[in-house]
Image (cartoon, rainbow, N blue to C red):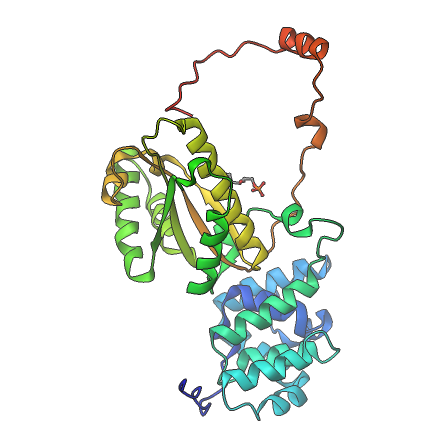
Length: 352
Ligand SMILES: Cc1cc2nc3c(=O)[nH]c(=O)nc-3n(C[C@H](O)[C@H](O)[C@H](O)COP(=O)(O)O)c2cc1C
């Protein structure tokens, strides 16, 4: 029988412990702008401008001033005392989630959000769900056909926060990647996951690579290089792993690997996570490749960061489909071939 969830006996979590992304989300959702102004003693808030600017200023101020964070906590408690009392009955995270689910999408949502985030039993699970529900309602969802495929956007690591995907969600993403078109079913790619206990080691490799490439790198540059290894909630390396097969040319294996990467990214998006692939110079560094265990025929294509979206990216402008479309006829093909500039480089099968 599965173990019973732990009973909640602790104290409520203070506002200051929630982190910047939740500060932003709570202040947007649970405290109207005039109440926010009244609660903060600080003079640094902008007098005009949008509510979003006001919230950004407040988030910056409370990050540096614990007394402001306490003042906001008191104001939020005062405004939402009824919800806090209602949520007191939850003795564990599952009960808390049940209460949250009943309140999500109703007018009680702002109070419930504050109550759930600060509840003693609130852990990663409850916070992830509550945050996801609130941000989902705040962000207009794409409508029309193919909303998931057409709505995917890359989300920069600085817009991501914990939690990353659970093991079964990551597994689903890999299954999606394995369902991409793949000549010969070779799956000419693999991923390497970097769990929390491996991140400092990876950060050492990134720092080392940065110092070799840029001997005068500043302390800020080094912190950034290390941050690429330590900050993403979930971090994978995507390795293209070509096979020697007479019937499957290397160029088709590259395409299969790219298709798999695309499916993995779409699956992450469909599961509600933000994700991005980044390569950068470190992916071209033989020392890093060797340290990660890559062998002959393998290429470190990029690092995939995956996490909960703390700050949604702006709308992506997509090219019109006509830019990649044409309709063949012998005359048109001749005309276009004559117009197209000749390629200045040689494309070989092994160097895509
Ligand atoms: C293999 C690979 C490596 C990439 N490396 C970088 C990179 O180092 N820096 C970067 O800004 N974008 C990189 N990108 C592009 C981004 O992942 C992303 O696709 C791009 O910013 C466009 O955003 P979108 O996916 O929302 O259209 C890479 C994409 C791929 C497929």
